[in-house]
Length: 71
Image 1 (cartoon, rainbow, N blue to C red):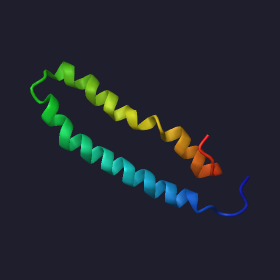
Image 2: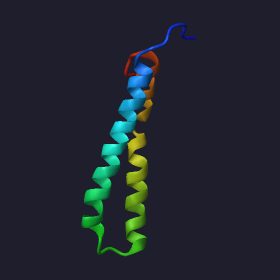
Image 3: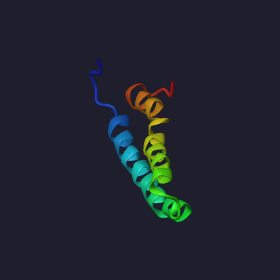
């Protein structure tokens, strides 16, 4: 158990919010132009995948926030 507060937690949360905001804005800006003419059944898996792909680096990021190590 941690006895002293760590600077990594607030910095990590702010970094996570900033990164997700940038990621969301990029997806909202560029993806609709690329798949606009596709039928809805074809667009759905693309948006599902893009909605989940941000989770891939999250585990290591949370480990860094807690321990200061990336793995």
